[in-house]
Amino acid sequence: MLLRDIAHSRAGDKGNISNISVIAYDPKDYPLLEKYLTAERVKEHFSQIVQGQVRRYALPTIGALNFVLEQALTGGVTRSLALDAHGKSLSSAMLSLDIPDADKG
Image 1 (tube, one colour):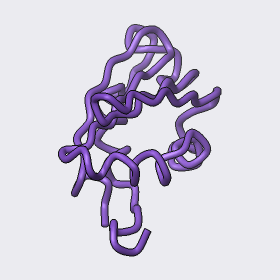
Image 2: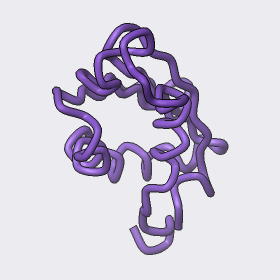
Image 3: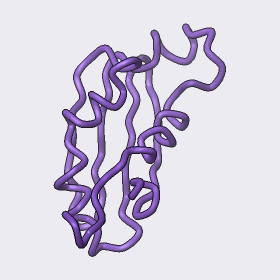
């Protein structure tokens, strides 16, 4: 199952940092996010893009995880020649992560 089957995302960026939140559609799926969406897994998923640290913050009361990806935007929006390869694109790429189904986890 793809992450996008059970969650949506929001993103923002500041300088060379991308901030991506992943929010479960249904609170019952939050434990899957917490179990399989680790900072290490996100760092690996974006290994070709993110050069710095990935930190995860859990927000269980709203069924969300927030990730801060440092050195993720090739210098930042104002310094990059890339066309829209910033926070919102990364949040869409985040949702392509494959995670086990709830009954298999």
